[in-house]
Length: 576
Image (cartoon, rainbow, N blue to C red; front, side, top):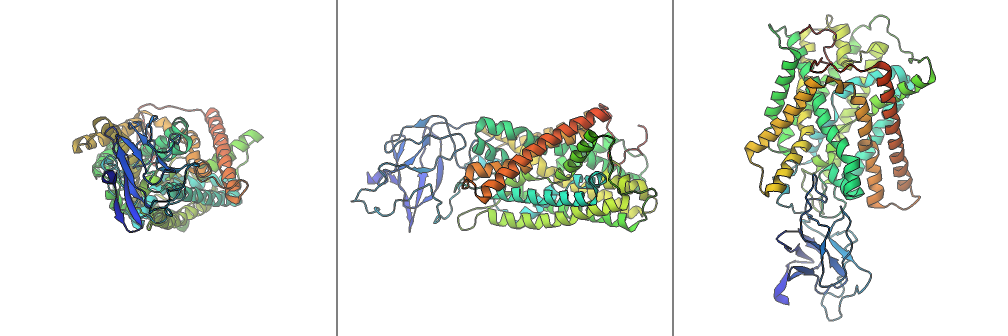
């Protein structure tokens, strides 16, 4: 019997490994004095009859892993030699379980006093997490040398996007008091849900959920997890990239107009040039390798946000500027306008769908969990984001009042009212920084899509994705984003509607995940807080969807198929 034990003593710790069953490696790690042996394809725990391990035959292949990174699961567990099998629901980790019966070690065992319930946290664990081979081949988890600085760069680059320029559009409806109050409330709310996601990234010791969809499936189950999170997360990645192509291409066109380049390109050609530049940057192999790009993008984002509001405040106000809240003629339009204004504020906060991916690039162990540097980087990044968003909203509304154009937001207002009174260098620098920021954000938001395509290839072929195929996947994604931006410019008008549908990803789902996973004490503060915020987020999402549909019906929608117009230069484009 002793010859069949597989362990390496490490002082009070013993390395264990879930052995191969039907050719599949299940898990690795360290546990307190737990000895695992292989008996004809089954797993038992000698000297620990009360502790049960669940072994599975096959890998459950799906669009996103049902489990964390080191777990492969199947619906049919292999019978165990010792102990009773514990039923395993989709998304539940097949680690070690403690049964109610027969939990004492035989008296003759030298380990009589060391039986540990695996339902409790493993506090004395060294390096617990070990990547499955497939995870080391994917662009999100290929590199694990991230740190708090990388976290700050990626978070700032993804969280500060062109939607921030639309914030002053909410103030003519909300007014000063409600506008600032809603902005502060949304900021605190999304910071709290960010903290929840960071804490839930590795809620099972040794199992990391490095994709939002993985965590949703582990929490709500395979079917409900995909139903709730698949479309919103994919839209927040793919839809954001389409918007970045449209806005970044328009800013590129604006830059060359300011530079007075002879024979300028058409809008479609500028969108194509932007997409090609994004594709070239996408050749970097993984998310950690984009840290330098994210740093440049973060500096550019902070730079153009600061320049826009500073230049706007330093110039004279346009004539006929007004600050009184806009009143509708009837009650229903007024309610819908208020909801749409709050939606503009809420949708300005982005990045929750990629925060787990960013955290997945960091090393993690019991002494140095990844949540510590991740939260440190996120706090620094959102301090800078707050220093950009609040001045943009308040100073932008103070400079232009009710005259802010719906196309382009503050950048459109700057070009409309101060184009001739501002130096070409300042305007050119602002537009160039917008282009750089959009290129950087595109890389962060495109990673989940490219990771998913490579995941399907790896699961089918069981080998790393060749470099040429990885480039082909990223070119395919860029081509799809470019085609949608050109063929369906109507999506810009539908962004509010689709964004309202995806709003629970930021404001509601993390609260429900915490309740399901952490199971806070009933009627405790955390129980009330998460139930309240989660339900409020779902209700707000529903109301915003209704308000967006009502607005589209009232104003009408013109498709303009294959006739894109830059939101930055709308109204001043030459007929092409």
